[in-house]
Length: 142
Length: 310
Image (cartoon, rainbow over the protein chains, first blue to last red):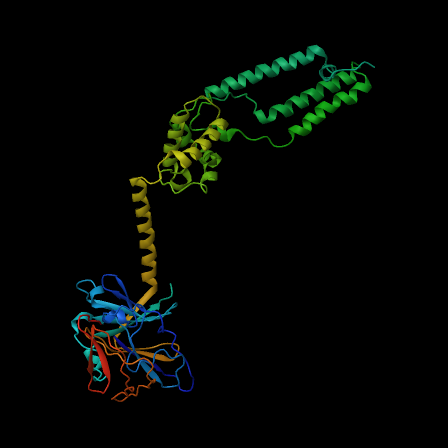
């Protein structure tokens, strides 16, 4: 899965709080199983260097500060063999959300899309992606 | 002056005959009172026990003053003799505990010191006010905090009189002794404590089922409360703008291969228009299970032959 992180502030330098640099994002399927959407490592391509990370083209998401309108892209993966059968939906939570409203991505039929994540390929049309943004808001009690 | 013993001084004011008369009358009245109490029927002329001491003190004062004025008592002994009724009167002034609340002990309705396995119907059904007093007098709640997680021990304050009756019935069967109500309560408390500590099994199937049921009820309530509070809104988008002024976008996903680059390449800024900039290549040492292939964008990539990722 490929992400893009952009500082939308006009004048302020900042760092993203909701995308972990080291830790993994939490992914939950429609059965309630949890997975870790993490940085690729050598073991994912058959290597035996546990903990050694693969370099990603243009991977600059580990920077600490972003100037205004500066962005980077990040690749996070989950090995396919970790998923259970008939996964129909994945929920990808952004990190460090402790209060409402909470946001997360919901991907429908994630395993049905066969596509490589190469550096040269053209970005797909967002309408091709079966992605929704879900917002959880806390309704005050009556 | 001869040294008088206290009991001698007590008999001086009204003489031995008067003292014996009063003592006999009191003992007879006391016996009649006990008889009527055992029968469960109060005689119309019975004097409440809390007034007995005061009545005796008043009678004692009356007789002492009579003997004093008649000259049967010397003045030196008079002050010493008057000390006792005054002292008795002072000690009788504090309120005496009303024993009415114990008269309807459900396991001892007739006050015959015989504990019955079941509570008396006349108490629970006819005297509603006594039931609360009796339940409050049971010191079981003192052991509730020390009680381990043993669901078989049902306390009366948690589930009402019915379960209280079951516990007390079990305790009464275990005790099966003739004892007073106070001793019964004490033994009952000790019995419940011992049963809660060592006697009853804590991990029975019944207790597990009860725990699961309680947890499911609590979890259902909390989930229901949480679902009532949270409102979910979905929209077709792949961009989330968070409060930190950063935009998080899902560019692409899929099952396939990923492209990697050399570690230490320069950081690039991703423009909004394509194509993206590509770092300068430096070929690293290769591993056997990886295949190098130059990509179209003059980058290089490791392509795993066996594994696929999303």
